[in-house]
Image (cartoon, rainbow, N blue to C red; front, side, top):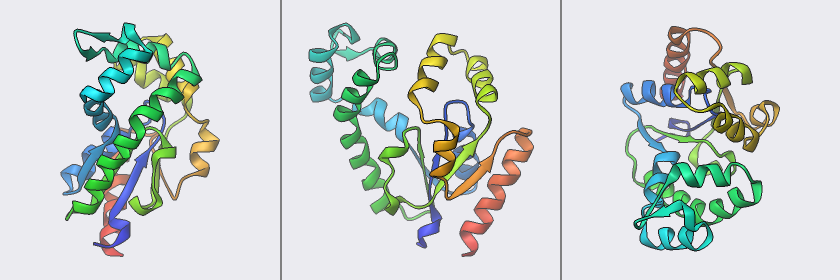
Length: 191
């Protein structure tokens, strides 16, 4: 497999990462979503115990309540860093396994750029202005305070764009976005 048939798809909350990876999946790409991997990691007994020891209110009947945990960690950068120290090595390990074993083109959807490994492929940033991303997140049913807390914990648009090897613009219609993803797919398969 050529290296550019692997891509890291990243962007802020509400940018359209999941839409991009959904189109890539329809086009035959394997997709791994780091947030979903993170949700799986939060069910591992050792992780549940560690979370319970640090944030006892976030564990009920032996399960991590992700909404309670999110309110705590997205309100305090130190707490978010502590959670990332617990979960990120496990998330990265699982993604590495996907990278090593995928026979199809592979898209890795991530929310946290610092976990990306250059070996995973170029970074495709799905970009939309902050106001548009906020509106999308609210339309998905998130509470305004949660959206603001998550946006505050993420890099600025200029920081995200500086990390980009490829920018997929998502300021237009859904048809525009699908067309952009199809162009990316054609480029990736032709190299």
